[in-house]
Length: 152
Image (cartoon, rainbow, N blue to C red; front, side):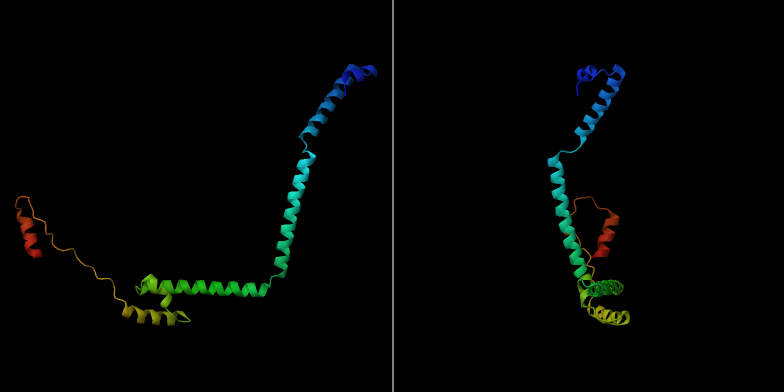
């Protein structure tokens, strides 16, 4: 819309300014709106998401909840059993590698088996370092001589 066109219609100048202001605002709003190609692209993305979600809904509807609950409960029991085995093995100083060797249905059976296994597993023997074989070049120290004599 051109200002000259409105002036030729005999519209007062203040009204023309208001009309041009509103016209500028509407053009700005149209410029901010996405183009048809952008809208088409967004529509395609949303359609793909809708298809994926529909497939997921169908999978969830077809899933047997009872079987899944049973599976998860068994998995939970397995984790609880493993935690009990680890706890009992640490009480009897059984190496972590041998935790899977413990067997038993309840904690008492696991403790009995751990006790039996612990009797076969010897704790690591601490080996003290040997006497130094290096020749001392330091002057004789009476305390050092006494310690060396004790160690021999």
